[in-house]
Image (cartoon, rainbow, N blue to C red; front, side, top):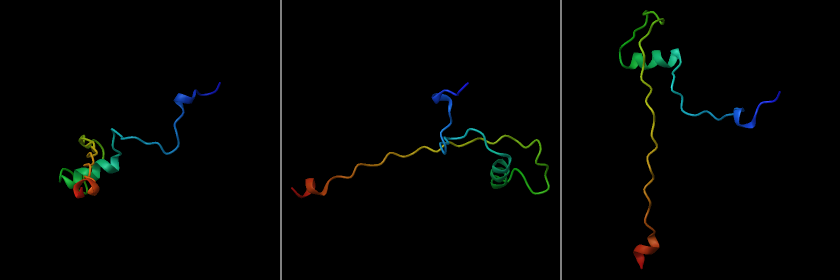
Length: 68
């Protein structure tokens, strides 16, 4: 059997992830001073994933319109 086109993963298409890896979580906990070296990496607390929102670009006024 073949895989349907809609189910195939396109190469390089990665969207926003909702889960961090253990290394990413430890890095974020270190920044917030909630984890220090020597603490066990097992059973670490959950870390909220911040979603980045793209700001809308402001439309520039045409210089031609201002000069007329």
